Amino acid sequence: MAAPRRAWLLFGFSTEEAAGEPGPGPGPRRLESGPEGIRRLWPAWSYVVVETGAGLELRSAGLRRRLPGWAEALPSETHLVLRGPAAARGWRRAEALRGDLRGEPAWSRDLPPGPGRPPPLPLLPGGGFATPRPPFFAPLPAGVRARRLALGHEHAVVLGDAGEVHAWGGGRHGQLGHGTLESEPQPRLVEALAGVPMQAVAAGGWHSASISEAGDLYVWGWNESGQLALPSKALAEERAQEEDTGGAGDAELRPPQEQQAAEDAAFISIQAFPALLDLPQELEVTQVSCGSRHTAVVTRGGELYTWGWGKYGQLGHGDNASSDQPRRVQHLVAEGLRAEEVVCGPWTTYVCVLEP
Image (cartoon, rainbow, N blue to C red; front, side, top):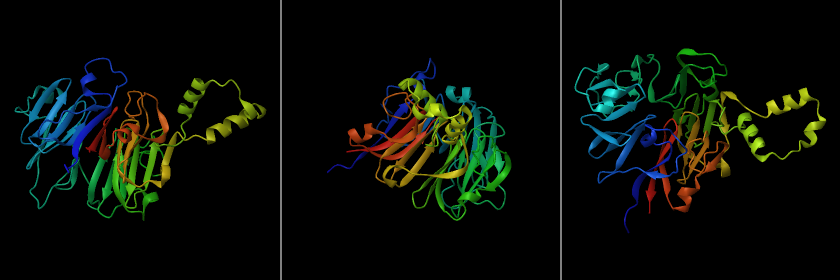
């Protein structure tokens, strides 16, 4: 019996569309892997860097550029940071798209040699981390020992060696999980998760997530598009307009002020503390990734669930509707595909599947 094959599928906005007017993705689309296959990928909005058996390759709007000698990528719409065995360097996006990486980089940092495999980007050997735009590097305080780090638009979340979570940066949408909307200049322990060892962290545009060692999912931050899978007022209003039932029922009997207060209490726009999310059938989560305003998880059984902003089909449900409820991606079930890994771009969801 032949071993299952790995393949990467794309739901949502494709880098091939970045040069034109974006629209809802027909999805899913298969990433061309070639004979080497795709091992890892790092998406930005208008391009993606993939790792194949032949090394790193940049793909955007029909062009492909080999990136020889580099092991990992950290892309953004202004710069591309690459890490090799002995150095990390950053180039302007236009230079990277042209393949012009021989000149003077916008940023460069030599890396100290060390035993074993280096930590994954954005972490760098030597106690710091890279960012995909200036100032490109920041040190970690001496007391923070990180094994994973995730970057949002304005904040950072780090997973410590003992499974603890620290967060810092912009906090106006509750994305730090400290119970306030204040910013934090330095890593601060997320006290609500203290005593619950975590195995993974993720950061979206303005929301965050973590997975406990037991497979429980915690979410916090902005919920404007339902990206926390908590009740979203904006999405409820959209649904009400679409359904247009024409009857308010018992709600019309309440005083307007009392009715509005009850409605507001039922919705969550900002969740400033980590909330334990109940997935259908108490599923255990093994991986989580966050896009700009959507979230995707892989379960222990190899299923893919998504929720949040869906304008470009990035949720994988065959439409461009947003959702504040976790929904299983039925395409994988129908095709007999097992999800192994998920990586969200800003408006995109990439999923690695095992094909029978």
